[in-house]
Length: 102
Image 1 (cartoon, one colour):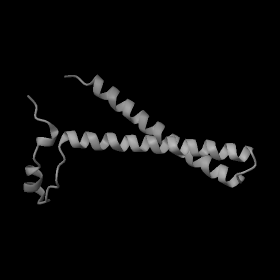
Image 2 (image 1 turned 120 degrees about the vertical axis):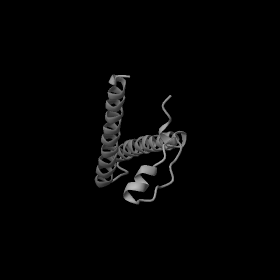
Image 3 (image 1 turned 90 degrees about the vertical axis):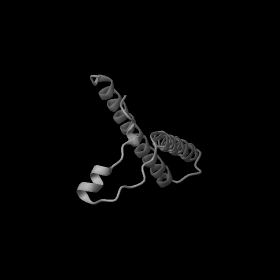
Image 4 (image 1 turned 135 degrees about the horizontal axis):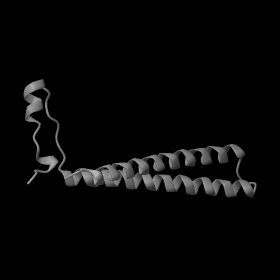
């Protein structure tokens, strides 16, 4: 059986280069941290989209400045494009892994 990545010690790196190994997180902690980061990024994107929608509605009612609307919409657009790019990378990585020969 192949050992998990988290159990591999960086002893060869220390011996050949003299670099001190850093603390390695177990695979389960790494996955949880990555999952939490993605969740926070998604929540932030949704919040920016909701804010832009709210500011746009206020502008239609005459309660918000045009500059506020432009800033909110541009921020929401940038967050959405970043989320789409991350999603595309995740799908590509999944497809690459699924095509690997065992």
